[in-house]
Image (cartoon, rainbow, N blue to C red; front, side, top):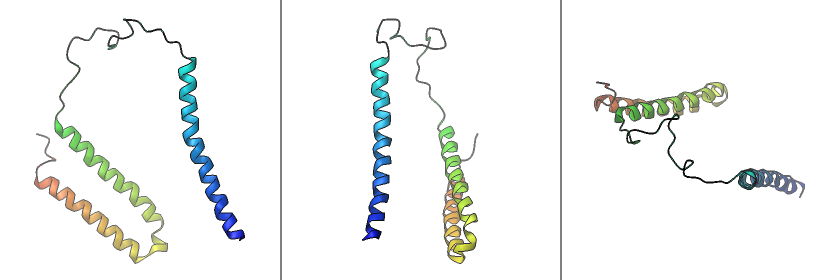
Length: 124
């Protein structure tokens, strides 16, 4: 019975933090809305670009390669973030952890080779 009480207490703590995590931002946003001055005008509704009136269309087309490079960076950045805890826990996990990480790295390498073959990584 006491073990059940301990688990209920843990769930109660999680529930309290969940309620606080939802309630505090909602209350802060509502108080900000109540306390801020609200005086709309034509000047406030205009587009502001470093104190200068905008002189061209705001939609600028970027090369898709920027996004692909950013996506590749994020993928390999996440890989390195996952490698750190694996390296720390390697002694306790043993050969199972090594097998899992080899599979993970091989999947990433297959993706890298695929991107290389499709010439996605060429800048020119």
